[in-house]
Image 1: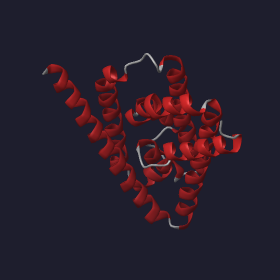
Image 2 (image 1 turned 135 degrees about the horizontal axis):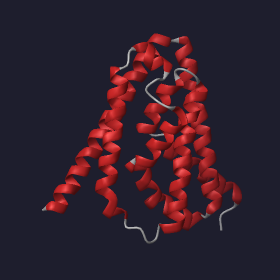
Image 3 (image 1 turned 180 degrees about the horizontal axis):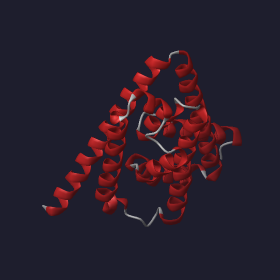
Length: 200
């Protein structure tokens, strides 16, 4: 059995690896952090709540739920939501992007997390494996890792926006639209592929 410090380290690294890669949650979190670090953290904590809900589902039904049977609905729902967010941010002027009007903080993060195919798939595959291999100690520190990353990223973006406001606002707008559009299009293609697979 691994020692507690090792399990804690594994959990924190897993949490950062789960929350760190660019994706829909990061896109909205970065965009909301322009107004204040607290708003960015709220998005991150909303997504983390979704992680907690998914963890409960995994521990309760992980061994019996066939996620493949829900793939089509998960992909289509996620794609529509992400493309909608990309459209809203694209339409917003620079002042609106800075004010964070295209997001809704905690609720936005929670909603994105619950319809994000990547997040759902992670918990029902890698997350389930982590639970079975390392136990709840590692999962607890996984959430610690998510908190560390959320606070770090929100502070970094907010401080950068205070110093280089115009450049950061433009960069965040491009990044947010691109990330949401790319993942939205990807999930839409995957969802349509699933539909054709079922039909054929």
